[in-house]
Length: 318
Figure 1: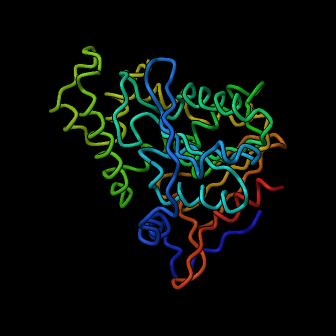
Figure 2: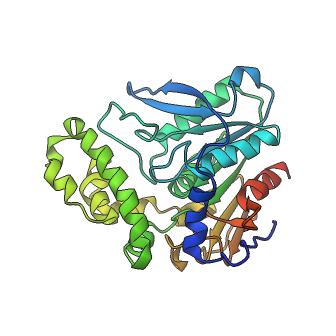
């Protein structure tokens, strides 16, 4: 693994976390969009680096984004662009409701929801049966990918994987993001989640007993998960959801070669996400001192570089 060295003078975890949004204000390329209809009469939107029919012989670089992320997230279009520069065909599946249009069914996505990912990957395997497939999960998408790789370890479809800045202990991360400056990130994510929930109020079951006032009064990600995420997806409570869907406990069940990257100073995390159990030889765990949450900005102010966009193509090429 390449070692990460933060940009000189800018190793602060919050600067590392926020810098990409200031450095990269616009996507690096215009994607090819595709709407994939799901078996329950809903949809997920795919962002491709190019028209897939024009690149059917290339290996596939598959990306799962983080909480309320999209193609416009700097890490998303950056990683897809980096993969395309290395000769890969890149594609990102937007979780339901994250591509700018509310989905049609009374459900959303969460850290343990793997059925859409499975449907999407089966679709890719049907159309690209002989292509090498590598998948990256970022933050929430990384925890989801961890659960997916463990659940489908007998037939993962994916040949190699990377899990970046994943909240592998959901309860600890939910608590951490309510502390100090990290509440800024919580408030940002919560605004987006609540706005999407308000758009879907007519679809939500009456058993949730939600109205505009109750949604607007939610003050933390824990409350959102307790009032909406958990009951909407069959969990007894946020605590039940966190316990059952935290990926840390499932790492030993993964069979494919997998790289896991965390930063010690990630303001979304605590040391609870760092594995203490013996991991199988197919898992490479890399812990950096700096990097923030999906930041990992190196280089200089005049020439910033994004470490993940160098180390992940290198990892997948080995």
